[in-house]
Length: 257
Ligand SMILES: NC(=O)c1ccc[n+]([C@@H]2O[C@H](COP(=O)([O-])OP(=O)(O)OC[C@H]3O[C@@H](n4cnc5c(N)ncnc54)[C@H](OP(=O)(O)O)[C@@H]3O)[C@@H](O)[C@H]2O)c1
Image (cartoon, rainbow, N blue to C red):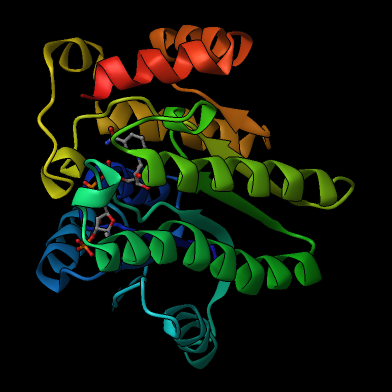
């Protein structure tokens, strides 16, 4: 058993839950963070059936300003050395911008951008001091173009892209890397949480969260700057980045509406 811990935010469902299981299989001890304690406890029990690791659970609302400092204090109090940070917790306050209560949009900005940046600072700094660490940032394929009807959500993911890829460059020459994951539609609770109906085009391209998490962790341990999981998503991302923004905005609007 290694002495190193991996933090997974948003571990209670979807891609985060799969990250947790896969990191356990690799022998990492885990700090699992989300709001739903019962889900975290169930996951812990499931993992401990097969993997001899230590698992710490932290139930907290990561959209709260003090959450990152509290998580850091928890790891210090328990003497945990963090060598992997998976910034996965996130949601989409989807719909026409003016139809979504502004408080919900601000909660999303806080979780998807501010907390992600704060956690990267706190735990990234420790990794830099130890010259050892991996950071995985969960963005979205929606980061590559404006997406009407999920405008603010896709903008949060564009922030994650620009921030994380820039930071990875800053860390060149160290043993700390930042990998950004750009998932396409993935079969999780994401659409339920954002109250979004999935149309048949999106449904037909959906990947499983296990597939996405596996591909992402391989990229992270290879210290890749970025990863788009799946052939169709790769093609879409490639075409999107080469096409005029006016056209990709129109196409995204058609798909989202
Ligand atoms: N599914 C997709 O199609 C898709 C596509 C592109 C990108 N993504 C991104 O992938 C990441 C994971 O999402 P998912 O698809 O796995 O969705 P999910 O099944 O809804 O999981 C989201 C996770 O985030 C946690 N979370 C949400 N709000 C939180 C808060 N305020 N404090 C703490 N934890 C919070 C949830 O836990 P609790 O509710 O228990 O707190 C849950 O564990 C997100 O960043 C999402 O934007 C998803």
